[in-house]
Image 1 (cartoon, rainbow, N blue to C red):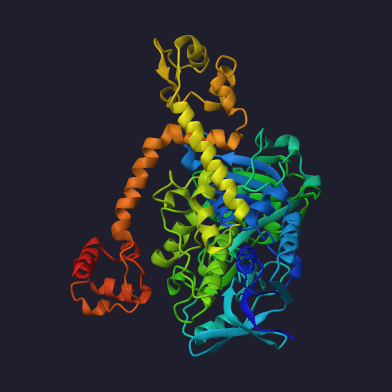
Image 2: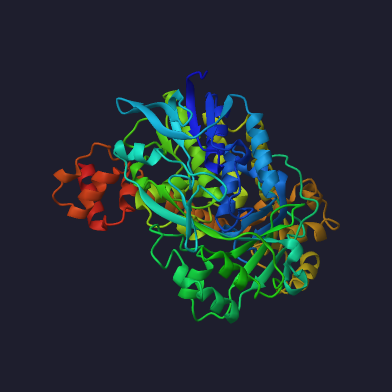
Length: 623
């Protein structure tokens, strides 16, 4: 009934979908197994992609040849570029998506991808032989063989849903959990633990009084995520802001005695940066109100997601408190918020390829590694899919450096530092933010992906055209000077001092008040030179401006990254006997032996490994 596959991907969430697509597009035969084919890449929580640092990750996935950016562009209902008031290193794209269309588009794209087969079933265990995975065992009684397996089980491993004192099994509300895999992996020697996450109440938009809420429109000129020819967003739906109040907080406190979190029924730790509403009013008791984001679930549906109102309190308490929020006095809810507790496997048990250290050709990606968020999961999925394919063909692994991608930061953080709460990406986690901007992800990553056979020739040609256009534009600008009568009217309108003599244009563009686009538009009538910019896209003009304004910062950060890389990537063998180095601290020996860092840089980021320990290793390696 089943052939032997190159790769079996278990789970069709964001990680599994990207893993399957990447491996298949590189030429592997892939079987994607999921418990529900109607819920491929489902947005189980908020109906949005991107955000602070997460938007950069989606751009990176797209630059590598993944599908997340393309699917988002086809199904978004609103687009906003966040942090525009800050420097370009902080700009982060975010899209509100149509939840149902998002899942549908993902399925259609996967079905249109050669080399992918599908099977609806539950995997209950792995097949292994001599320390190597050889396939999976399913609930229907099938043993399906493969050369590699990628586990992307999300929140389904022994998942338990909590709503007040109610407790029941589930991977998400309405779906069964997955049993058997955790027990199987523990028998193979893996360490597991528990985490929890939550989701808010869903509300019938027909019962909301939007006149009492603050409207949040999308960008006037909406952008997109993919570097391919995805369609522009021609119309948008608004989001809204609402606020809690002391009365709302008092009602929520009535449910604390029945809260599974405070009663100790939840063992796993939840995400610090996306706390439940009860956690927020407890931790920040001095605040009289908290912001709620009211987000549409799609183009046509009346369902709204109340971002900021995540809760596991009794459902009647959630409802009563919600009706005291201005605009929600007559609210009707589709379902209450809930917490979900699930198994994960501490990621120090992985290599940077996301292959496990214990079992060869077995890969973990997504929430099984302790992350939270669609974007973080999808990023791990594409890297696992790439590396599983490369290893089967005995090619070099594909590992992104911290200076090359947010994805590189994400995976290095997971494996090196470990987690004790669900991991979420932030711009502050990256040392080289000015290098890892959302606008240049294609320039950074598409050539690397094309070299390993994932990014298409068409994608590479687009990058080459963009790079050449940027370089030509910068060369043109660097060679032109403007006179006071040409530039001063623009300077005065921008509120910046006029010039008294002819000056170089690139020097003028260093002023924060001056926009290259404005200069091009206003000077094009006075100088034929500027007509050469008319064919350039807004994307290229923006990239040129960023490089002109921030080149000194970019050069400095590149220099630091190059200098540190000489030590950062000094290799450490996996069988290195740290216990033989008595000069290392006991804690360092224990953690280095357990984590088996691949490089000196990775070793330096392990909690408990001191600079003195690193010095010992440097001296030893130098010999």
